[in-house]
Image 1 (cartoon, rainbow, N blue to C red):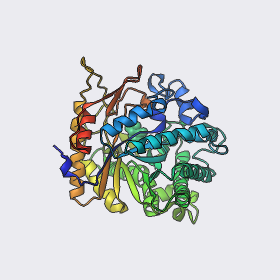
Image 2: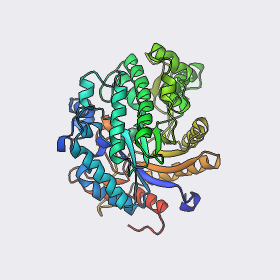
Image 3: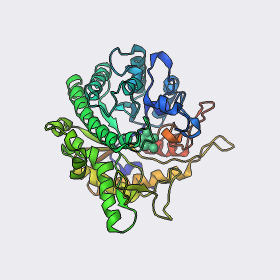
Image 4: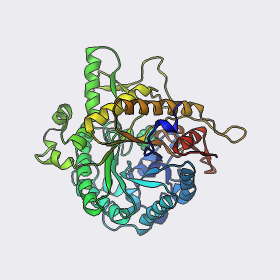
Length: 444
Ligand code: IFM
């Protein structure tokens, strides 16, 4: 069993969420639509036709949610801002009411002693930009994203210290533009490569803008999802496929951001998209790296456009509701590798598992599998630290059960159960575990 005393006093405990997955209020107070509003409204795109229209209604219930964070003794809460809530057209005239919401949320967090960690982009691109042809496949989005970063910095920079540009740029570019299973539903290798490079350039431009607008004490980072890419079988073909998958899914976005250089495979694919100063422009100095990790991934050789296929874990592997391999050793390894390779303080900004556990007859949610998962994965954090990885915090995914993208509301990742009919929140056993680690003498 992991114990509070196994971690340093300064270790940051907390939770993460994302705007579209929890806020709801999709048309309130002048919010513009995002690509996820359009995508989830299209029949067949999201399981059961679920949408984020209401989600957890965090927009109206944020005080109750922040109170739960405080009661868990969390020191940090990472949330994302909805670009189209504050800039309904993605550019131009800001929406004061939308900005006010993030003011209120920030102030409430600070009032309750929870540090706000703001992420600028967690997948909900303003629909107006996409429809105007100014989405991630168009390089002209770069200054627009920087303008959005500047707006948020001017509004909240007096109160927020920790800033991140993108959540999982590797995942949303592939899922939304390469594989077409997430918004905006584009399935095209060239569009994926356009998006990868334009997102990287936007990151660099946004960091420069944040530095210009924020106090010198600001801590700026980015949040990749890094997962060891393993061969599905012990063959030369699958080993080669795993190397390609590692480039496509891990290094392709992380290396230019954190090292200033594309790895050779991604560089070859990007071709003349990369202009002479681009890598230097992407590589803006950062203060921290947010690591999101869930499981190792498995690659099989395929003659498709990408040169690999992401396949299921080996037979007999312990998996979660998402089919993801429970493998704390892979977490330890990627923490150690990431810390050494990129040389920045690492905060785990997402880790957790999905289940479908509902309240029992007494109204208690005993998510025993998540408790066991968290114990093992926190053990892996300790092993990584012992092996020299500079891991300084753990923010669980997620604070609340929420809209799990194309899977809708089926998989529950929260440490707090949400009844989607009544919107009642019920802290789970996993909440109590993290609360007991985050603070002494906790009682719920
Ligand atoms: O829900 C997502 C989150 O938005 C990004 N990281 C992975 C989570 C679980 O799939």
